[in-house]
Image (tube, rainbow, N blue to C red; front, side, top):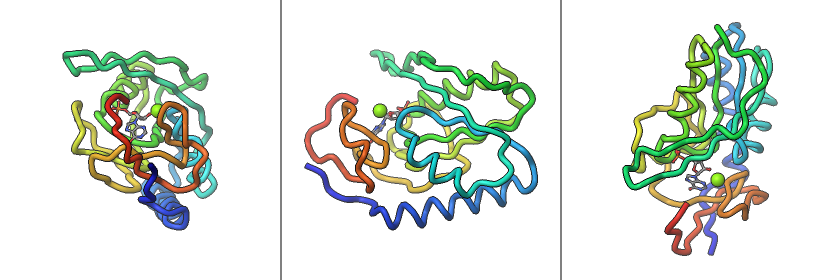
Length: 174
Ligand code: IMP
Ligand code: MG
């Protein structure tokens, strides 16, 4: 069962606000944008419409396998094709949960020689964190809830919903 948490009107307002924060932060400086597939698609497109001065964008895709040790083992499934060396990079995420994926992406970008790495996430669930990461820009901080919509899925379902919903059925593995 789905229960609406953030309406599409609220999303629109907040994303506009985030773009203003990011524009103010970078000022006239150039940077590149890396979106984390696949859940980021709608958020990233909406955000980019109002971002200024970014040079280009690309995508990365990672899959995290959480083992018994809870440190997580992350595989990069798709690498960006653009040169990252010496660049300021803004990573855009749909949601930060355990932080395992974001930390792996940070390590990957550091290895590629990124000058500075900044994270912008639409949603953050800090209470679930296993590996520390604090986003520089965050749409909403939410409780320990499993949410879908606006690109976010449960087993590939519900991505196309325009609002954010709490999935109220028992979600034991995600
Ligand atoms: P992390 O490595 O645990 O931070 O995992 C982040 C990824 O887990 C996200 O990019 C999502 O794909 C997925 N995820 C975590 N929480 C949720 C949720 O509430 N809804 C949908 N996907 C989620
Ligand atoms: Mg997912």
